[in-house]
Picture 1 (cartoon, helix red, strand yellow):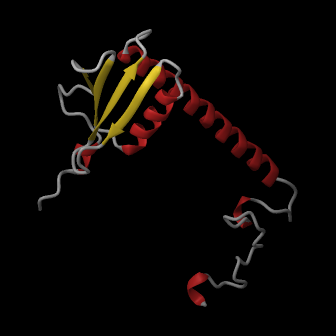
Picture 2 (picture 1 turned 180 degrees about the horizontal axis):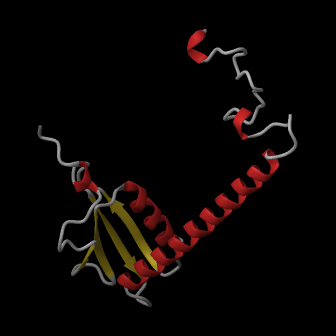
Length: 150
């Protein structure tokens, strides 16, 4: 089959660099970063973080082809900081934001576990449907039926 191996999309080959920086000779204080083995998910997050920084004049990304697992991000700064430094700072801020989000997520689910492990007969995680309703021991369709028995 012509399909590439699935691991080729996210595992770096031996000796392959994760980031390649190319300075732009035509535009001052600009560089293009080739981020290997990543896609739109990371590209859009890094671009948004870069645009929130006051020293960045331009930040954009593109995925040249969907079968090639990399994206290009172009950054231009105001000259007070190099493009490489601003990308490093943006990535550090992004990692901090995601770590904070992960901590909040874990905290909320630990509260839910405490709330649902109450006295016998109360709602618990086993009889809550995905939308927060109490389904009881017999399930949301009553009796021993499931959604295919309608």
